[in-house]
Image 1: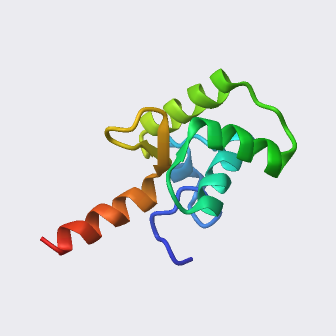
Image 2: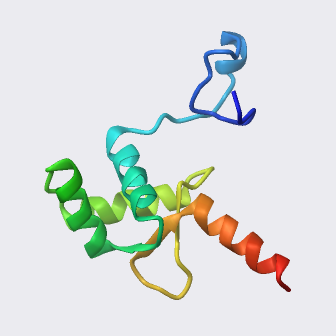
Length: 108
């Protein structure tokens, strides 16, 4: 295991500890959205997510469902995506966003 803080793979953690965690598993929809952002490797606006989701997974998702899911993903305890500041309806993987901010702060 490379990430000792990984909450996705808990097979090595005793059941008594697992029972105390407040971890919610990602559903397929969320996992698919994360995959889209990983493929893009850049911020995506809502229209790009809708088209990309259809092209990648051959599933037509309603705009409101995608928007609601992205908002929920951005508000989670450990957000998977972030809303890009100053850009309405534009999201980015939280991990990518954090790395960019760390790199920018190093240059100050």
